[in-house]
Image (cartoon, rainbow, N blue to C red):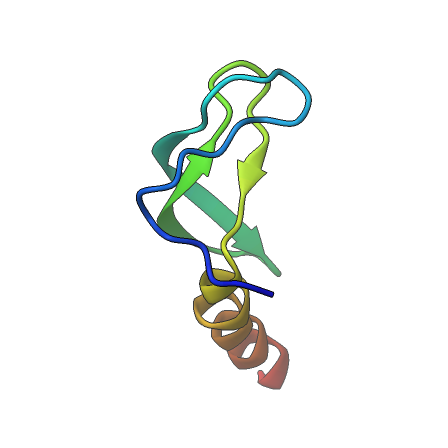
Length: 67
């Protein structure tokens, strides 16, 4: 799989509108953190980049499950 370049504009598959970067709150096991991600301004669908899913989100999940 090819890495996504930050300057690429993603479209929502449902609404066909350009995603906008927005600070988004993620919650897991009663804990939360915020991160800037691309979001559809119409339906609210969130694009979670691979780096975030395999990086920060995986770290938080592991830390919380180890407690």
